[in-house]
Length: 107
Image 1 (cartoon, rainbow, N blue to C red):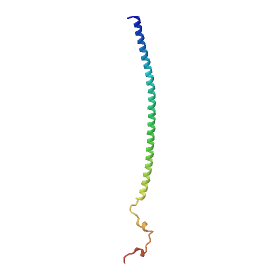
Image 2 (image 1 turned 30 degrees about the vertical axis):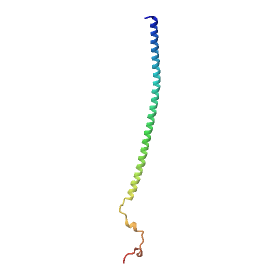
Image 3 (image 1 turned 60 degrees about the horizontal axis):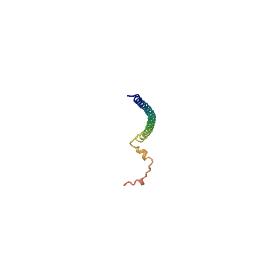
Image 4 (image 1 turned 90 degrees about the vertical axis):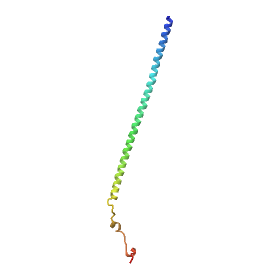
């Protein structure tokens, strides 16, 4: 081997090593920026899901409270309505006025 071919081979290896190093640096930079972007997107998605879960819990609690209040109201109303299931016939008929002509009783 001549000195020229050794030098030529050394230059090729240096160019190959330098190109590989530069390519690795560029790939690392690009992948690093993508990773940062992906982490930012992931963090934003986590925050949105947390807010959605919080909103759903809040609405569920609100509906539960409203439902319980309506249930208590209905319970009270039904309790008052059905407290005495047999109607008081005296109270129901005390305001009626009947005389003998309205009755039309058979004689």
